[in-house]
Length: 536
Image (cartoon, rainbow, N blue to C red; front, side, top):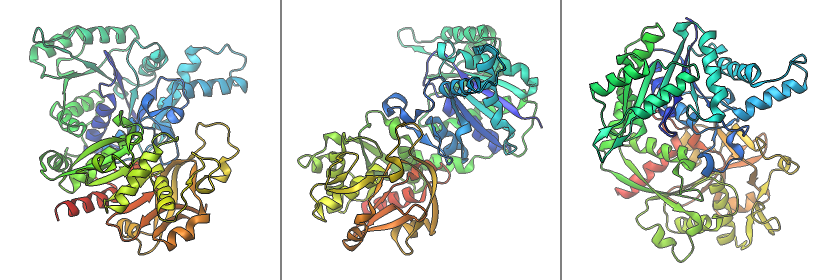
């Protein structure tokens, strides 16, 4: 079988859910027996989102091989249960950087370097590169932004050219658009979609399938009208009605027969029957459980929930697995202090202190950690959350009142957290942290060892600062145990507090490895302990 390439484009407005549609389709195609991967092309000029504020782009997702990527790759991994790589996320910045590097090396043999063919050829090379991996039979490519965006034009031109590079049965375009509802007239309006498709046609791309986001069901008349004016088959107009959760979308797409239409266009058949029984069980628990657990996520970017997307989704996975529903309370760390902490955490069953960079809000995190440590509230600190737990312990248990991280106070007399030695001479910020998957050895018999049921684990990282080993003995002697270590680099990766119901901090990011049908063991253990305490 030839490799099949599906391109998912969008129109009318951004944030319609191209990533969720792509992930849902990938899940359905995988369920009928095909090996699927998904890639995302982003039209911004940054090489990657690693230097961008979460307010600009949401969470920066990290792959096994250390690529800093778009948060949609998290959806791809969580839905399909796969691992992605740096080849799964490509930006305009990376494309231009590659082309300019080739030009400087003289690889274009004196030619004038232009958008067409050099930039579009580089984009197409990235389309096809991942398809050369024999682990995949179908490659879904999501094009970021909307048709008509000036920065996206080279990508759409590359998609147009790809249609002629590939055999007709190996190419498919799915166009996602919005069907707005006007409450004043009580009507669904198709004109924005018609204009979106017209713009796509101007770019030389005829959509094969329309997926139409809507608040209301599409009548047969509306579907027929869209088919007529957009030059698509009547059976290829797919309704994507607003769902209770993103995890309902695969079932809705199955009911709309999206996978069957795609298989028909690609001239391939199901390899096995489509079964989503485990997925449906997950949804049943997600929506019907009456066991509510209130968990606070404390961070500096909480006004944009996408900044902590993998953490919130990991809690949802664990909750549903335990037949519970996790209600997240988002707390801005810079608003917390000794006077309001008790009121702020009232009725909270567990606390996660989230990752982040910079000094803003750190003292509020430390204040929250002191409260949960002293009041036996389950606590999970991730990356900076772990570091804040170390700082809090040093100040309030060890008596190092000026204990800090050199990230926040370069002159602290007690540098509990310090910059990694190899990071001290680095000037460029992009792509230079400790990134990707690293090994960690867990202390036999420790709490975290019992959770993982293993001594040797691998988890993903994204940080520059580390626990200062000069304080390791003092911490262990006073009950804050360092129970996970990277032996190769001699770095502390895990801390856990003795004589506390559940108090663990990890330098790594376990949320990146949680899957819908395989929740991460740390999140399972954390939520399970909260559930047992709440239910007595």
